[in-house]
Length: 382
Image 1 (tube, one colour):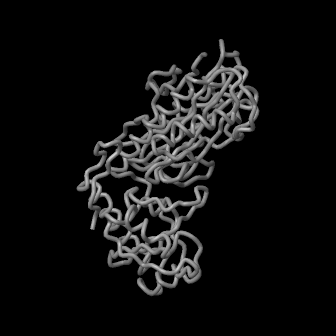
Image 2 (cartoon, helix red, strand yellow):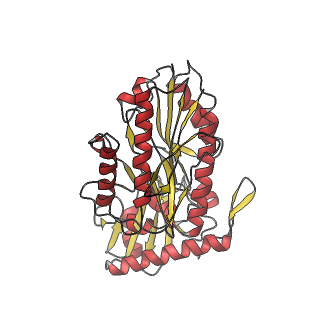
């Protein structure tokens, strides 16, 4: 089935139609295999991240940005047939701009009559799973199928990481004392949206709010000396995370100590992010490195991050976590201490860690583990 177009960004081909089609067909085959293992006749996908995944990022159904679902659904049957279900008022645009090159068969009903579940059962049979609660359907958790990224997905993640990092660094350089947290949000949003990227998490904060709160959402305070841009951003259903800091003048010793501790924990987490490592093992890595850095117990004050991809965090490292690191999986660790934080989005592929949100023109903070260097982002001194 595949897709009948290239993926282009700013006039350049990012993924060819052939490679894109291979990705989409492989995902459909994987989903069909999963259905057969679960004795299912179909899977109804309503969550945006799953629809983006199965369509190779070609389809975005959100109209209400914060909503987990959109204005349509996708049904895949055990025979590999693909349908998109939507209302009559949404069908023209979805046909033209979202599903037109995919060859999915449309199922359309009046906007006042949501027949999604009934029509899916009619088309596939009585044994259908759904990724949101639905009467007559069992639950479908597709996170394990999304974990390992294909080559086209990696190319999209690389582009998204570069573009988000560039936007973040550009905004960071404009910060000056007196700017408000709301203005910081606005500048970041503008820089991302102009690149076709949707910001999904804003944690813009200044001065003591950065030190006091692990999730310092903007509340309008004006910068005196210290500012943080901490954000997640999305395109093609994929997401990346990044944090960067700016400071007026020399850093206070306690903040420098916190930054160095966060960088050390981040280095240990990256070093131990290897295929087969469990969430619990990685949690213990962070716990031990915090203690070594003089911040014993800091892991209890906030989660340390974990796998990313189609969710801002597909899972986070927990004391009893059983999730396992996969090859070609993306991660966003976010250790923090005393106002310092280290956060980038990386890719593990064939045993190599690649930083997708690198900002090479900004300061770096040396860090490493077992003789291997894993530098973290430093602080831009204004």
